Length: 465
Ligand code: UD1
Image (cartoon, protein in one colour):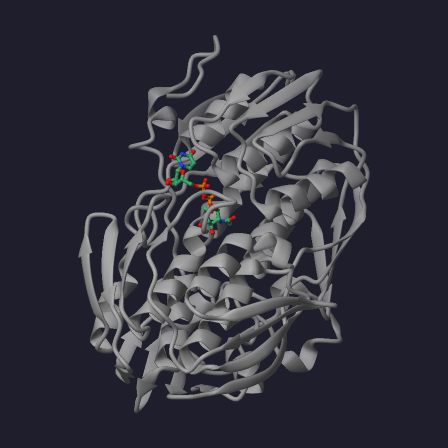
């Protein structure tokens, strides 16, 4: 369990079995390509029509190039980190996705102004903000919890709606709260909100029981303004953590070791607003590589960072894909049919759980049998029922899935339940005869800017309807 400090933790906030996030996915499609070059308050962009499904026909071979957007899982945390200083922040390479719109609304609810111009996001943070994350926004995006650390660090208090579970199971936040408590915060729960306070945050040694991405980020963002030195042991090592550290250091923080499992932070008095380019989205990269694996052909991923995707590249190589770094990204070529392999998800640098739906889709049409083991989120298999509706031969047992590849799947109406699993259905449909309709496109829009358009640019037959 967590290392405890002397602060007494209210039971209802600290038991992993009790504190959950709920992910609702009702936010609409965000953004209108026609407005891309206009400066618009991010929260004022509205639905432009009824676009709630993808229609896909069997495709391939693919060819061409795709430009990757900025990493969703990085930009959301950078936006939260902007709460740490007054002034004008500018983020480049920000994808036009619903989750960024939700985080913008969350910041605006606190008194921050967020405007977008193309892929540039401007965040104007006033001297004082209302340190509260309301339920109607937190319920839409569980990543909202990362505002807790920066709000506590800068204002000494925060009121954040308590989230629940999500579509792939319970999402506890006990490690976030435990780490912040060790830094000196206290928590109470009232009326569905976490009320957090900290007279003074002080440096400490935090040992995470698991390298949680969100808990590492919350602890980092609180520790940068704490008094003295903080050491986070067993920290998450994802590239998005390193991106956050780069951003914080530009702001004047002193963070060393991000990207390794030991992060050392010397607290500073205050921070300043900065400009930063978001790293490319490695999960979006995996999406296109899986599409290539299913359809065959070759493609170039502009902006890709092969050094962020070692394990994926190795796994796809084992399956028969050729991948080589390119001046500005990577080039990949796939045979007509990939070979099956076993897959096991692990914290970075292991194979990301977010890649798994794409690998399962790929294994469904690969040559042979692959065993997939999920070690991060044990409930993340719901989309498999949808793949089975498309004729995939998959048996699940606990956190394992046995995937027997077939030459082709069979087009069917299916439904997206979360961002990556939804995109994986679109990708799987490229290898299904006939037509597949993937409903619940709004889930996919949470993390993808124009997935259909980018796939079409590679020659795939994908439309929004
Ligand atoms: C982030 C990513 C998500 C990715 C995941 C793992 C964002 C917005 N999301 O989610 O896409 O799949 O990392 O790479 O960046 N846990 C606890 N207690 C806690 C926190 C986590 O028990 O306080 C457990 C979780 O239930 C899960 C595991 O730890 O089993 C990993 O979760 P974590 O790394 O925290 O994922 P997120 O930050 O939520």
